[in-house]
Amino acid sequence: MQNLAPRPGVLDISPYIGGESVIPGVTRIIKLASNEGALGPSPQAVAASHGDADGLCRYPDGACSNLREAIGAHHGLDPTRITCGGGSDELISILARAYVGAGDELLYSQYGFLMYAIAATGLGAKPVTAPEKSLTADVHALLAKVTDRTRAVFLANPNNPTGTYLAFDEVRRLHAGLPGNVLLVLDAAYAEYMTADDYRAGVELVDSAENVVMTRTFSKIYALGGLRLGWCYGPTAVIDVVNRLRGPFNVTTPAQMAGLAALADQAHVDKVRSHTLRWRDWTTEALRGQGLDVPDSVGNFILARFASPAEADGADAFLRKNGVIVRKMGGYGLAESLRITIGTEEEMRLLAELLGDYQRTRLAQAVSI
Ligand SMILES: *Cc1c(COP(=O)(O)O)cnc(C)c1O
Image (cartoon, rainbow, N blue to C red; front, side, top):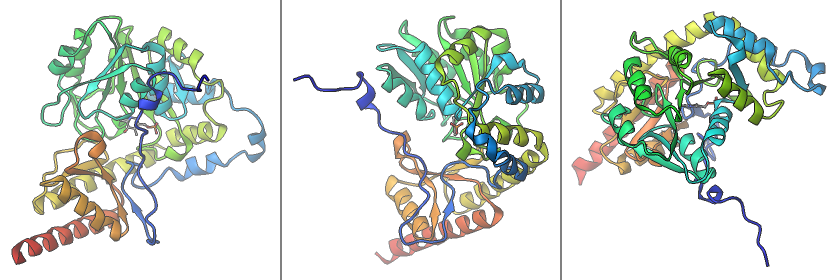
């Protein structure tokens, strides 16, 4: 008897667990679990996504020509060196599949985005992590983990879930230390939230090297996660490889239309950014005021660090009971932390109030024991 089995590695994958969106028995849910934009997408993008209903019987433009032109124009990039995907997750998987094989190593930092490990494992490759310092990727440690098996380094910059980032000098230093046959993927899913002078999403490095790609997404500041739309910018040879491996119609027509309209509405992006930064800082201060450790975050989310995993779990359960879903971080080795996406003002005020209530009841219980 010969039994059907997938390739080595596939069954070793711990499937990615997305943020939940229902709590049994609770009708009013506030979802702060998946870093979706606080104010929703641009109304113009929503309208464009259901624009041409008759066109739905046709295959999409497989080359995403108009959208790539628009992305190129907006970011000052050559559209022939851009390719689009069904979310940047698809591009991350394709890049791994293209350059990392069975027995190879895919390197990323300790608290790096979980999709990198999933992509490596499913290919029969070995996910290798390098320790971080202060919840931040450490170039020295990453370079120390490079072996002759290393085929790719994935760096989320800024990183999810830690909310920390590497200054461009550091990213350059990382690249300079890598052999030319190692692909450096700069995952800039949160680049639009960045205001730091020393940050670059990666364009300059892509332009000066043959082995660097930058990935971007419409799921975060553009809040179009449900449509699945991302893109990457890279050297011609890398883009050519991605175009060979991707599905010929991997981006739907509604996603392309919405992406175009979303890009055109930068006023909405500006509004989301300033709202998010304001309420991120407010929430950070509010939670610090309750005694929680909340590292500075540059993304649209914060990490609330409790004294123990049990306390984080207790806070999570208490929030859920009150209709608020945040993200537990055990999968990242940060079980004492909860990741909280920045939402509306009302949502942030409620979250802070609930966490305050939780801390007070816990303290009261501790005193009465
Ligand atoms: C959300 C996220 C992505 C994936 O976004 P898509 O929805 O697949 O475009 C990629 N990288 C990081 C670090 C993220 O947080």
